[in-house]
Length: 582
Image (spheres, rainbow, N blue to C red):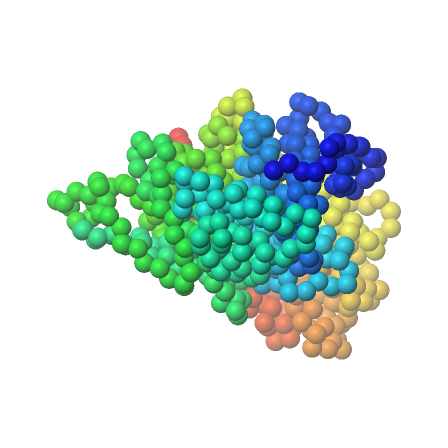
């Protein structure tokens, strides 16, 4: 379908915020058009920008949404179209797979807490611009990913015709030069496909977050059963009061040795309830003379990562998937890496399993798969830092990652990507010094001082009661947030223990909230010290203070027990890996 504008001018504007689709004139910021043609990232950005704004001549200009709550009708549609535009004109730029990196490691990351936002809200606040900028990932990226999911579902249900594209054309022709809402869009989809698409997609647009599909495969001599369970994926598993359900287009296929295109011939169905059971055909490689031996094939869910959900496999299945990981398609690899890193955060998977998965990516020839591995490495590292501060578990994890990704063993085409993975797990000590000390303790100290002098002089101020309760809280809040060198953490602990009587004196008339703040300070300092001896030393020296901050000390003990278990687990994995490697 052609638009009605005979000529479209493109003008580059300095200091412009992005691009906008005026009728007959598209304005871009200069650096979106004047680029280095040898830089793939810049080229991809330019194709995306141009495709996006031209697509707005149809969705946005030719047909416009009635209200702000269906803003996705304008932006998600053209975001999905511009990805396809770039993919078709420059397949070498791998627009879809690069977009998938952002979807998996940026957009989903923003939706893992209960207070996340939705694609289609019930109402918009008065500050439309501020609201839009805060939640634009929902309107552009997540909603576009949901349209991609729907498009794939419709293609798999009717591979002879692209009914999704047909519906888009019907929609534009029916509503050209008019205003629409989501009902108009879903009605056309239903008319063209013959299926109630609105009932399938409304939950995706109006509910917070996204689902986790748990997969269990039971196998007996002649029967295989696939049991699926869905629930909202949250870092805090207990924080889903609504118990939301989605109408999920689940796709799976049997992985078979030597089958390079099995992922293109799977089954797809709508999964609407909490649980679904599927009876599968017996494993073709089953050996009847041994009741315990079941050979391939086995099911893999969400091939190509079209579905907007996370897959958690049972222990036997994830072990099999890790084993065959190098033979999977790149899109599935990206999805499995991101899913696994998030499932480590929720403790559904063990760190050892995740490290096993990383060993299968180290020699991968795709920079995109290695980039996904790098993002996954950072996801788990950040979780360890958040959970355990600068505990030995964090350093054991970093050592394990460095032992897997060796630039000297990478191919010429992937060596730079492997080196970047190394860089994200090696601390930048200059950055650490600036933020851990200068933004916190150093704020109160004049002159160019060493880290030891800064810490010592700060605690002298504490001793002289020249630091208030609220100031102490602020300094140690900063100390908690930033990584610190080992010698810095050791100095802070020693000075803190030496001056704790002075700190107690400052909190002598503390309210309940202030006592809680003191407990948090103690918890932060001990966790940063990173060993049980610090906790034992504190309890031995300050028995009177223990009752005041007992909840925080109990929490410290719990965290340190957990961190010790993680550290031992990684050490055990390292020993096994080194034996195998050598």
